[in-house]
Length: 319
Image 1 (cartoon, rainbow, N blue to C red):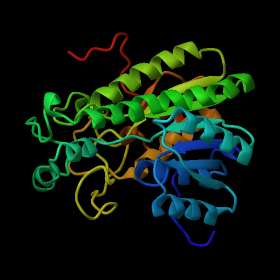
Image 2: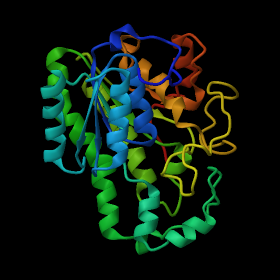
Image 3: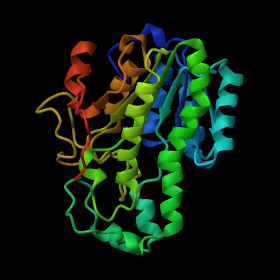
Image 4: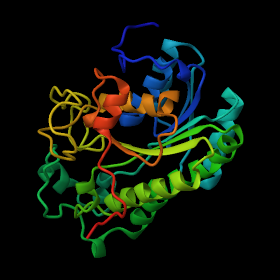
């Protein structure tokens, strides 16, 4: 390793050595954290981004500094079914198979606000903490940008579906696979002014439950992972990205406090639960929803998983 960096988790998962993963939106933010954590554990990782950016190349380089050849990158828009198929083929060509799919790529609510011509209002009025005023800062649904609405639908819901569809055939054939869909907090799902971002994450969680049921007994699991509040990524406007989160110890305090945080959450909290979900330690765990903010990396993993799992409900309800 060319330079020392803090370990993503104190736990080691031998089953991740040589395991092959795709992390969509892996060049920055939560995706970067999860991709680097997988490489650190010995996995091979394909990271994708909708546009060719320096972030994608930098993350690939940082991963390969840990061990050369562990990470490759590809420009691919997950709203395009042909691009999704191409990502899977390229991963298989590079590493041999796809064992883990992390559906992280998404268009954020800020993009919808910008499309509606409200960028100045966002910069002046949107707080960086998740306790948002319920007054819509973005456009109301009938004023929203139709093209932007449809782009978000295709990316945030269609993308995970098309990526999973492209991967799952091989996973079922090999009797092993991990699909992890990255979601958002429940209050965000019904937040006004954010366009379809929240509702599409709610739909992704419903889809995850259905996929888990349909894949029962195949060796392929489907689970949902979310930070549990607004995170210090470029999805939140303002400068100093990566340096705005106050000190935070995941797994401490009352569990299930989605979106109730003083300040932003550090993206690094996503790594420990993601590693467990991708490993053999989570065999048989499917159809679950885990909050990274409630996962203590200092605890035994079984205990951490139990503490981080959101309360299960038989029938979801929004209204």
